[in-house]
Length: 399
Image (tube, rainbow, N blue to C red; front, side, top):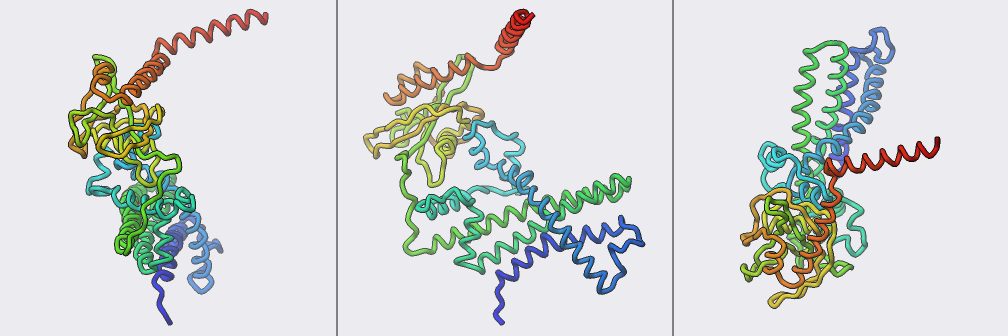
């Protein structure tokens, strides 16, 4: 008989994530059932059969509730990293609290550089599925698991070892929460404290194992790709022809509006708007936020698209770039050593090239139009007064 580890660990995942938590709840739940109840017969063949059935039944509902922890807890925590912050800013949202952003790359949570593997896996997925126009039909983790299932069952078994642990602790958190609530209603405070402590430890372990599961899948697929000879082809060019994305970044200072320009790589004295190449699978808004951060160290959120422009260079191929209006939200350290300058509109226009001058003018006009409609107390009071006057006139006309 051939032993197939991938099939064994699929059963193991079910055992840890469904049956074992269900047995835990069924066992402790026996205390809540009257002793003369037939729900849990005496320990014999029938009793064990009923116990296993109830465990399996309850385990499925615990697993179903536990799956919500991915969306409610793990995904928000995962978004504390730079990758998650870039996605937030690309959608016009603000940064997460600084304490959480510092915690994410620490050894207490995800460790240094937690986004490198998933970023590379996303690009490999896009390159592989782009010809089918299916790059957005599956996330990077599920794509890696599907690929390992087809190409490397042994590798998939390694991933599922971590997955079994992660799902067990996820379901265990739910089971402890259920009994914590029950014990609280019964005023059994010692057990409430025990359930809370164990629940916190289980939650931490779940997040840790969930992260290791995804990392293991990414590492295996990236390694397999690196061993290919010849390597897989790069992703095809975008259908819209765009090659770059960037932004006109502004901030409000005591002197008024200021705009951010960065020195060119080959000519630092030549000031340009921050922009960069659109990587495979990236949205243009995401690229704009990422490039502004890498080139200037500035976190900036996307407000609106400005224009699509063709930019010419004496030393490099021409590029077609989408430019966004962006607002600076926080300063930080850049990954590239390039000079940057915050300048007022006139100074920025004098220092910039022709196409950038036009974009600066468009950006300044857009910013001032938005400021005219800011929800200031005076503006809100004016709107309320107009609504009140309109209401009075309407009522007077009726009567």
